[in-house]
Length: 187
Image (cartoon, rainbow, N blue to C red):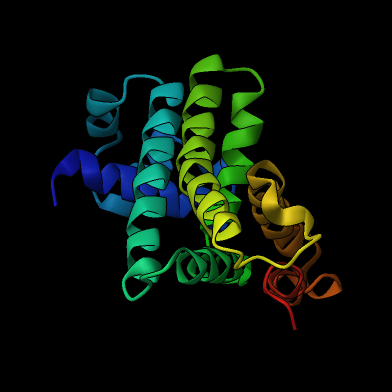
């Protein structure tokens, strides 16, 4: 793995495991086993490091999606795979949604980071919108489900993921996504 990729991955892991406050050149350098000056060589400012983590998160979403979509053939199967992916992100050991939360906080004061976070949303949303449209056209979605709106569906993925990590045992995001599934495809 190239050095800058090692730094991106270490930053992603730190943000997902320890939070935004712990994401600095020194903590990343320690995780990779390099001098912090090397981190600064690749990413001169903290914002650059956070942008790199956001780019890594986007690629992580794409890799995860490919894995979950591997055997899905129909739009319905692919939507089910998207729900399964969202469920996986709700699991306590998943870092992806925790990274999204950290990126959101960092993006409040940084338009560049917010733009990268928006790219993650757009990636997830673009496929979901196509799949919802195709499944709706083929009559595969339950009549009356509010989740024919791709914005609502992806916002539900993001929101349930964040809430399940924030609330722990008080909210079972996986169970809630099962309810979304039932709303979309029937009992």
